[in-house]
Image (cartoon, rainbow, N blue to C red; front, side, top):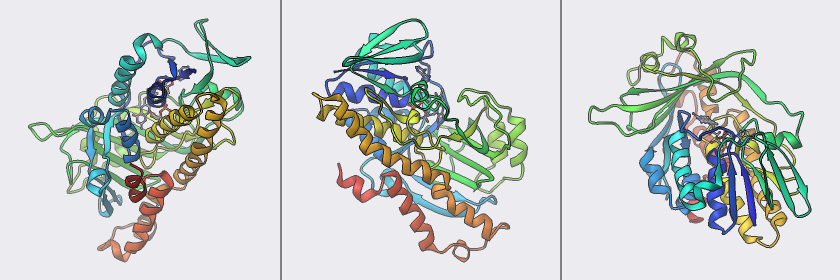
Length: 405
Ligand SMILES: Cc1cc2nc3c(=O)[nH]c(=O)nc-3n(C[C@H](O)[C@H](O)[C@H](O)COP(=O)(O)OP(=O)(O)OC[C@H]3O[C@@H](n4cnc5c(N)ncnc54)[C@H](O)[C@@H]3O)c2cc1C
């Protein structure tokens, strides 16, 4: 079996590695002329790390980032609403990892080049169209090249050209908020590897270190500031540059005893701006010999550390389904979609409804001026229930995950 994978991002590269592990021939086609390590921080959940462990990449990925120890939600006054241990600290068999997105892509690319072969990963190939010819599928690229395989995997991100062939009229769903994203050098807070989510959905700040602290106690701290922007500003491009002045003014009063938000923001160099967009779940991913994976299949709001993690889970599921149906790739594609589409539909929907961050909304609605004791505002069992329900929806319930090892 020969698979054509469109897109050399986290989903496409991981899919390439899993298919190769199953003995399937793989070629990966990436639009950009050279795959470079782009992006700021990203977080991978324990179930995604389990899959990377199956590829033998756990050590390298952990070494390129930092194991997250804690997730903590705060109100806009910097008061703690809820904190829970994460990854190994929470008793998972695999860590949760905070990492530069480009570094993660770099680890995957190096492994793909070594295992699949550098000549089978083609940059400068922007997918344009595909057509089935008998038992084969032929892809055409903007440089005039064509490639023939048995199946085609669209892993080409939120603006997927493969998805557009099947859903030509679907536009992104804009949340009405934009995210300014960057990294700054700073002192890690709380455990030294805490992911902090502060504020509420109308004004939010998410921050976590993506490297260990150096000998001076400084680490690279990822941050993401989100505010309402009524009109979709465009372009919806992960590499679009933003202006620090446009965003930092909204956070000037966010100086807490454990974190000085405006000071952290002002130490950033490059700032990127990206609208918070997703797309409605679709009723079908697989059309003949072509299917979708990662953001191409289920673009979701970046809440709960799920964007990259769900793409990695797709890749593993696709490898297993095709491996189990080596004689009949169409059956393999159907089995993959049967497992992954319902699972990810649930996460897209959960993230539209605040996901686990609903506790921040309750704190803002019930105590906008802050609180003396969080128990007076939200009952402890209410907090616990929210966290447990979301872990189940996103597929990283600890007992089930550890038992599946
Ligand atoms: C440059 C970039 C920076 C990002 N930075 C962050 C970040 O800082 N934080 C974060 O949480 N998420 C970031 N993301 C998104 C995050 O990587 C994804 O949400 C998640 O990892 C799912 O991965 P994916 O492989 O499905 O999609 P992506 O990571 O978006 O990868 C899709 C790949 O397909 C390629 N592609 C697109 N169109 C075509 C085409 N027609 N033909 C061939 N190839 C094509 C793209 O160049 C890209 O390499 C970024 C994505 C990109 C592309």
